[in-house]
Length: 257
Image 1 (cartoon, rainbow, N blue to C red):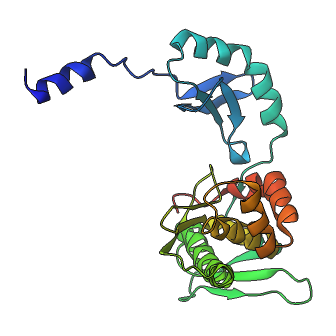
Image 2 (image 1 turned 180 degrees about the horizontal axis):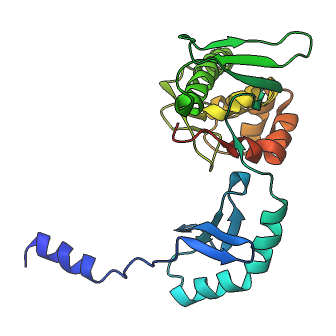
């Protein structure tokens, strides 16, 4: 028997992927539903997606299809109550006020403008982002401007903390993930969510310090936290802010940006 045939037989014995409805019918309407299998999950968990836009259900491996359907049915009331109090998703339009660097950012759409301009507010006044082009492209142009500012601020923080641990990063990329704010690989490749630029500066600084601390300790041991705290004395405040308010930043709708 050849190896390719063995692989084909092995694949045929795997259980078929479970399929679930893409929406869950609730008393206040249909809500988008995503069911994911996580090898590390120990039990079924339901969460509200950022901005109350839908539901995510995480299930352990080899969970029976009927078990998940029963879970969904039993937790409809929980989903309805949580969705009713979830912050509404903020859409990026002319006049919208977005969180930005611990303050506010007013979106000003000027169709004839050719260059997007960020005007930093003074004396507690909101900052302003002046954006041109067609209105349908406004969310993407705003996201692009925030990504540029995020890269600038993140790079400055990375340079500072990397110098403190005397190790340089291999690369830095920006992403838009809801599962984590940052990551660091064993070969010191950093990745950050660009939405962190909307958080207060001390939160961005903590996030970078956290990932750069992994240059020295690729774990979350007491030694790691000691390194992180030495880089960012306001570590606890940064952690607390992300835990309490981070989800709201994912609730801002930039379209397909």
